[in-house]
Image (tube, rainbow, N blue to C red):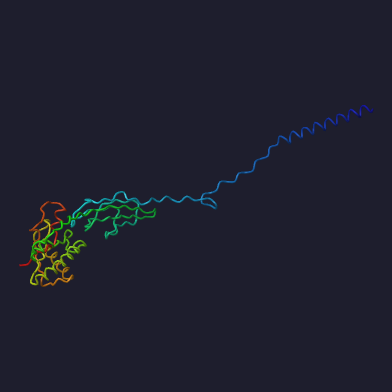
Length: 269
């Protein structure tokens, strides 16, 4: 009887041991799920950064002056091409411009022009220089030469006032020339009180003879009015128009035509 009880107890203990081993094995094989990764941030939401839309920067594709070297009284043509700009301008009195155009300028001295282009994407600048050549100063003389007559002084020292095509208004370089002429005339009148001056109006070859005679008269009158404002007596000045009949230059190009669009001073009779 005792041996039968010990056998049953032994079987129960073995069963419990097997059950414990099975439970232990099941617990070791169980995997723990990893924590969920946070979702990626939505661009522009909360802590995310939004990407701004691309805006093209203004670009000056080209900016030139042709010719880049001129004589005083001649013109140079500025040409340019701009992209992506809303506000464009050139200094030295040119002002606001279009994105692609040309403009004639008449600098009286060497001038650097700056083109500025602005837009939502930023700005761009470009410069060109127009060289204005001047005649070299005459060498000094050790002994004074013979005194010039009033007519000779006017012929040798007076400066022509130049005009734009089909215009008779006084340009900045023409103001400088006529201001010089006013000082010269005051010196001449002090030397010869009865001296009189003739203001000639000239035009280039384009247009009819009648039209250019009228335009030449307007140019001579504009020069006379400007000199009167500088203190030259009106009764000592006369005007005459030669239209296109007395050209200084006969070549068919702008440089030559510019030399013919002028007001010229000569001695009165």
